[in-house]
Image (cartoon, rainbow, N blue to C red; front, side, top):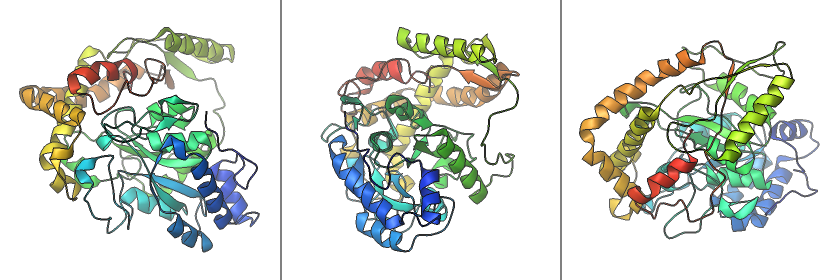
Length: 410
């Protein structure tokens, strides 16, 4: 276990508290940045940081911006452009890329919220698998048990927050990349409605037939999630979606909660089903209306999502340079990326139907939810795997069955 919590200015405060302390001049942003740097050095064996940008962070902290998180340190995930830093995407295929000339939209958002950017966090190649592991580089380790995965694709962010390096870090999600690290590291993660928060790369998303991406954060408290969501919503509002505002109290009525523990994509460990059942019983004892329900989607959804997953890899393989606007060498892609892309090529005739059914699944899920306020089910299908079980050095045929024993809900 690696924990960096200590009796410094960060203590075990969440980001909301740190921002208030800076506003009250009880601590300075420079002090917070220096404490994060010291804790990051202790957490170095986790291999969670992609690029450290500490000198620029110290300079920014000397004159901290205002905003709801003014002066609070934060790391950006390394698939999002930060001006002056190379965007690595977890891949050797872009190792020769020049530093970004400008910030990506999420980076701009976090600057507008007042955060001090500390650098970037690691992810597996193009975020394509659910463990932050590589063929020829150290994996990101779970701070609770360094022999196990920190999840992915926001694995570096999850490891830093769980280890106590800082209370909040940027993350994003398309197929579990916030939710899986939250589950693996004991954090709070949320994938909100698509397009509610500004997109990382609108050019990429707009060229894909389905937009599955969401920008967010990993935190240790629900309060930080709510505060980020409300602040981000004020900075970027997507008109078709009604604003939610700051959620700072529970509803004044019992919730209608549906629950199940069955996955359309693979088996579910007894530990997961037991956790859901015991949670449902606890919620019912607290006065909520709890009902067991059927899963909203079946096995066809899993098959279709794998094809779309493969299409994303094929798109990167074939037009990565144009899509990412980076120097790109497909010869350095990992075995998993190249073989899942091959799966897409072999099944091109099936992809249009898969896309059509995936688009239709939104209404299927809406119908299945009915009048439920909350749907309770596992985030993952098994306990956090040991390092080496899931990594991009394996080919599609070997790795996909393993992925579907863990990432079979997200």
